[in-house]
Length: 421
Image 1 (tube, rainbow, N blue to C red):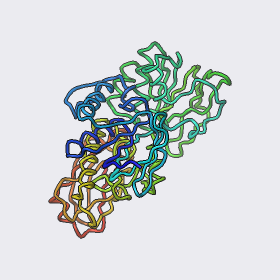
Image 2: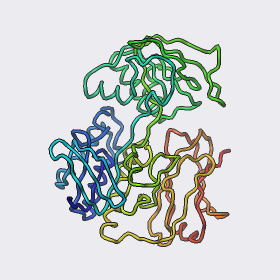
Image 3: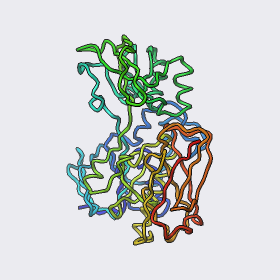
Image 4: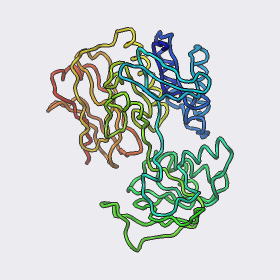
């Protein structure tokens, strides 16, 4: 069994940023395990720009953004293994992995950072009637075909769901000569960033059909068309008589991302029902001591810059854990997601020795105009911020100051909520 101080599972943007941060803090015994054949993760196929504005104050493409971190990993001579699949993690931080070169490998780590990312929700989770014909892809799979393989999935496209990948693929498919007939969204609002709605749909006259869904798929061997119907905003059930048929050869699914936590579950780590990721404290440490989580495996982010920021924190905290300088055995305080809040992260904090601001992140459950975000401990309010608009497509990030946290050291819990006007 090979011993390593810090083992990072995942060589995407979160894993790379965590490795760089840990190294810069002083950690010299790091190993990154990545199941793909190269580092970079999903950024490799995101050839559009818009990355790096927060981190590098530059507008970069996905590969350019990833390369900046890959270069630092190489400069620091941080070891990594690609084409390596982790198949088991234990509570004792023992990791089993396999690849073609080394076969089965066993590692004993002092600390582990989970950075496995997320995957797209497939058709099987949607239960759409119709044959299992070709021509139906997740948006990310289509993106990989077009941007990495040079393969066009089809010529007439309907997109179900308005997540950011779907919106970006609407524009990308248009650039490649396809006709995107519509983007169909079950909810009364898009789950993507506002800028992507404008730049990827509005600029190309692609209709966004809110409160609609696909109710039937035509075609047995190859997709021939889809039937779209309006849904009741309350029940989400299709409204009879509103069906429209779209003749198309491609249906792209952009209906949500699922954090990949099979390994986390195997290690006995507590998962959060709202986010699908591990429950963590303000240090991003999971319920298993010495195991940290960051990036989209923790909760699905809308900007990679925030992934990198979070992962850098995980790397620094993991190094403090390894060097036994991370506060332990402090009383923890659960964070409750109140009205309008979906899955606040972290799920608990330790306030006994608060000396650094604590960042809370969440997605609003609905669209709220002229709303306020509040954090309370019992009757005591420690944070309030007004916002012109809150939408589910854009994460809310707020910082609680050490001074505010020290005021509530005896509280039972914290509640973060939205006050809508």
